[in-house]
Every structure is written in structure tokens, then in C-alpha cells.
Length: 107
Image 1 (spheres, rainbow, N blue to C red):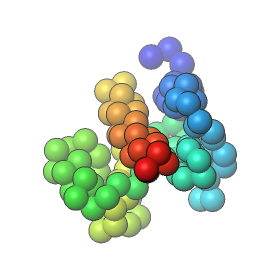
Image 2 (cartoon, rainbow, N blue to C red):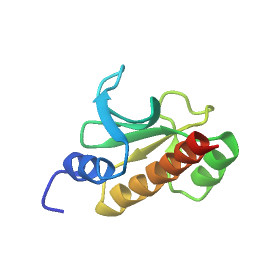
Image 3 (cartoon, rainbow, N blue to C red):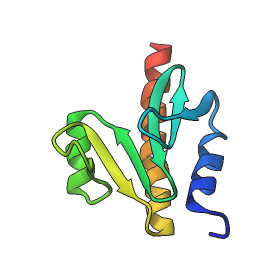
Image 4 (cartoon, helix red, strand yellow):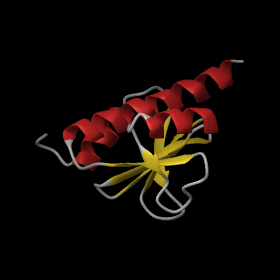
């Protein structure tokens, strides 16, 4: 990956229809679809996103994300971007959130 993890991740998410980026209230960049947060990025090293509790439990159990670094018992998860594979996994989880929000918009 020649560009930074942050730049690559932002570039990918901004290709999705309707996604915008804005400053996150606790620092970093927040990805938004129709006023709803898809997830947020802290620097070049950490993605946080909210999942339903059952999905969060499955994702953490499968090792695809860690419990949130501050709120470990919530539906939030953290993905540490140490490798290119971590970035790809974060994008997949963010895509899952994007699709959930998109589906609820059309309901």
C-alpha cells in the first residue's frame, strides 16, 4: 500500500454513493450516510464503528475487530490498522454498516 492507510480508507469510502466525511466530535474523521455515522477513523491507525450487539459479538469472537478501546461492553468495536489486511477488514465492516443504513433508508 503506497498511500497511507488513512488516505486509502477515505478514498474507498468516499466512492460509496451518498457518503460524506466530517470531523468527528472526539477527533478524527467521521463517515456519514444520510446523517447517520457509518464509523470513524482516528489518524492512520484506528477505526471505530457501532454494530448491533449480536453482530458485534460475532465480529469480536471471529477476531475481525476488538471490543471498543474505551467502551468494551457496548456495541462499538475498534479495528486497529496494523496491516493491509486490517484495512481491508475495516472497509468490509464499514461496508456492512453502510448497507444496513442504506437498507433502513429505503424501508
